[in-house]
Amino acid sequence: MKQHHYKTTLNWTGNKGTGTSDYRAYDRDHIISAEGKPDIPGSSDPSFRGDPSRYSPEDSLVGALSACHMLWYLHLCAVNNVIVTGYKDEASGTMTENNDGSGEFTEVLLRPRVTVKEASMMAKANELHHEANKMCFLARSMKFPVKHEPQAIAQ
Image (cartoon, rainbow, N blue to C red; front, side):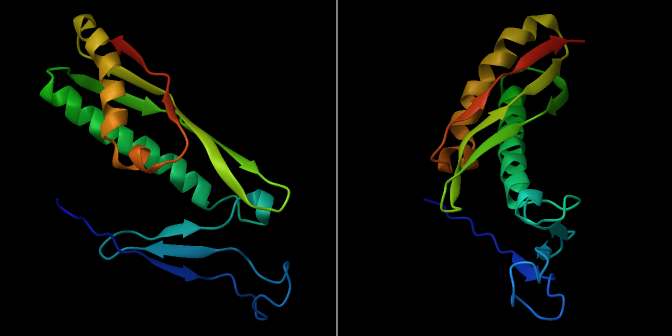
């Protein structure tokens, strides 16, 4: 069995001078880095005093699931002679916050809108989303369902 390893660095940049001396005394801003790649500006969700112009961990999770699905899907289309000419996904996730402040995602819904070269490819194009979900490393790792509402159109 092959193993793949990933390394990132997270640097908190939200110390306004007094650290975490009070819940309101610090920003949630941080930078996520990986060698040789652009930095990702992060913060917490605005509901938790975060900067709405930065990516939250929740945004990143939904985006990562969407990207993982797309990459597997495009691969499967290529090896199954389905020619994709356009792909856009408006994904959403639902997180439930518990009374004690903890929480968990209960669902992510991917809504890929795929354009294929010919109408005869549409049925196979829609079918391959199921296989992509089974293959996506991230979707396989989640303890909540990653659902799909795909739509294929011909050019």
